[in-house]
Length: 231
Image 1 (cartoon, one colour):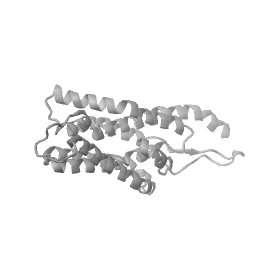
Image 2 (cartoon, one colour):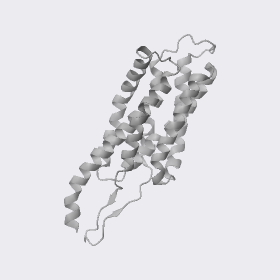
Image 3 (cartoon, one colour):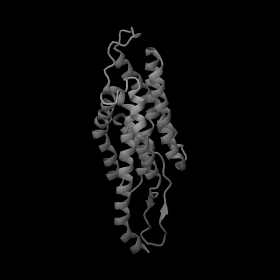
């Protein structure tokens, strides 16, 4: 049986890398569509904004504060989350962040800053949830590298879509962030479904070959805390 398991590992690992890597990449790319599109607008001369701090700077700071707070809370929250609920948690958290973008479009300028704070709060948890699907595997390092590659392209792709919406589709700079997120929702849903279909990590058999292959219970990535500042 040990020989059979060893022979099956290369093809299984390749399948995990293909499915898990692409799905994780697309989930995090989609997340950026709810976090970064507002950066494509100038937000100059905002009527009703009289604070010393530039309006766009205030938006960036507010979102980063919310994002950082959720990073800190996520180390505990994600580790206690039932593994079967991770996909729903990703969709729910990003859905909340999208509602905050809708709020951003309709409230007065002062409250728009608070809306971006609310937008950042749930998004800081997404990295840990996504990586919890990838950890504990023979291919975790490769999968993690694929996930991190999303940082390279995600911001540029999302901003390009945001600019297209404003210049070609006539979407205002206030509604553009919510509209950008809406466009990425189908990709997000399909990618989360792909992550949820990944086989669980496998524990190697004992040297004697007498024990069966057992599935390890996935937990939140402990390395998430170490990489949180980069995500």
